[in-house]
Image 1 (spheres, each protein chain N blue to C red):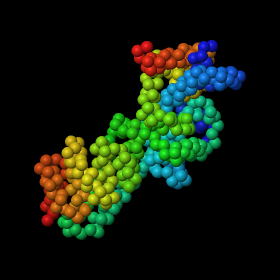
Image 2: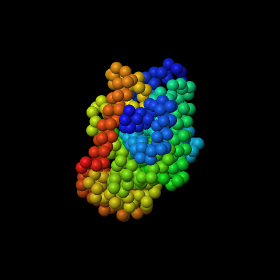
Image 3: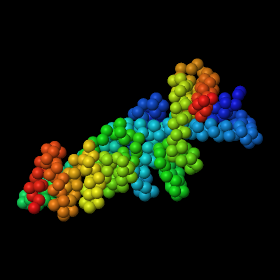
Image 4: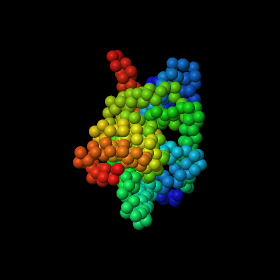
Length: 191
Length: 235
């Protein structure tokens, strides 16, 4: 992939412009799913599911700044797909099934099976999400940018309109504490 | 710096290597501190898992229906063109009289139930059903059928599509109980009755189709004219 084209793609993805991931999808979906089916003998449904996971990983790698140079988009995307397939295959070999999308994502993030059931994980995930939603818009956005998208501090300062990275840090501490308090209130609603 | 701020820095990856070493040394010494860190790490992972699940559903909705590449991947126009060409060939070579038998007439009526779902609302988060529908739409009935079966017995539309997959792959006997179970469904009952009738005729038991065909004629709605035509050729 040409440097200028890649930088344009990065710009679109960082700006949450849908055209960015659509471009990746258009250029790689067919190749990745077909190669995955051919090489791993997985089903079309599994290949499609894995591809969508790979797209999320690709987005995270761009946002966090882990991916700064890219020579071949198709090969890179297929590499992510294959690694995800290997992780999921390990779970399948241990007879672990993912009964919810949250359980699947949790397993991919931790690279290991959870001791909790899918229902327990989903309930807990909904609790942490609900606690986050109790915070101000600013705190929600800031915690998302830091912990979920792992964007660099300077970029966060720019997006949030903060004067410096230091303001990001101080505000993050405050928001994180609010989130912890909201979680405690949920766990012990009667004090 | 207090503990919560330190933990938030550690989990954000914002500590220097020296600070990380000191932090992890404290975790090794202080069991309750380590537990707090692990609990918060898990909470963040759960939040991220939920965030990813939401994003994935959104991406499916945004990318797959509108993407030109998706069009290329699922070339429905080619299938339609091929189906039309086959139909023309059949019409060309087949004497009109052969349509007089119930089987031939039923065969001429055998067209897949259309994909009528609004994915963006109802099914965006149900990847299995969504994938099954893509396969179905692409004419890959053998692959779609087991996925539709696992979507669940509580979903009448999935059942209807599952039955249709069996019908399209000539597994008439297997399709019968599926259509029969939908007979009283308020939305898909008539479509299921029609398909049950076609399946029985194609399975060589046209007399079993009569009851449902008469019901459809009486209702004067879905496929009533075709039902009448079939009734006229059933001995």
